[in-house]
Amino acid sequence: MIKANLTDVMRRVSDAAESAKRSPDEIRVIAVSKTFGAAKVLEAYEAGARDFGENRVQEAKGKVEELKLTDARWHLIGHLQTNKARLAARIFDMIHSVDSVRLAKMLDESCTVREGRAKLEVLLQINIGDEPQKSGVPAKDALQVVHEMLKFSNIRLTGLMTIPPYCVDKEETRRYYSELRELRDEINASLGENVLTELSMGMSNDYDVAIDEGATHIRVGTAIFGGRDYSNK
Ligand SMILES: *Cc1c(COP(=O)(O)O)cnc(C)c1O
Image (tube, rainbow, N blue to C red):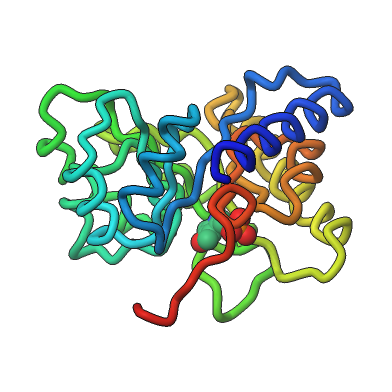
């Protein structure tokens, strides 16, 4: 089932890219494997997935260490506490959820644990709908935070990430995705250089809209793995 789902997602990604006049190669599909065990991750891997998204450091650690997939890339997409920064810097290839200068500094200082691997890639999470219950920096503070983050030399800030407010109709999320793209473009203009190239946005329900608005990383869980069961967590 995972193989068929993944094939379907990849086809839709291609279609969405084509109608947005973009190359599908610009879009990285992250298979969000949170709550699913190592066996399911392996099934997705064997079907061709190479990027996996997790929202808990400890849960990810178990899968990373059990599977030892040398050419897989692990993405942290959930909130990260500073006391887990060291472990996160060891396990993950990319952290989408950096939401403070303090956390960025902790990650920068933790990167010695990476021992010769590529620099840890990070994104700044933006709370695009200014929702009090959500993590992320308000859009109005983003430029300031980017300036601070660019001072850290052991991490590589490459873009922005967002989780938009819940919308019943996926077309309603479009304005949030377009706002994130515009914010990125404004920051680049202000820096005088295209430092921020990546946009992590779009989930199972709306990734085609996100691709149309310029997403470079889409985070797809349910459409690949099926519904999640939180009952035993
Ligand atoms: C769980 C999660 C996803 C995947 O959501 P689906 O609707 O299952 O595709 C994407 N992004 C984040 C930040 C998540 O926590």
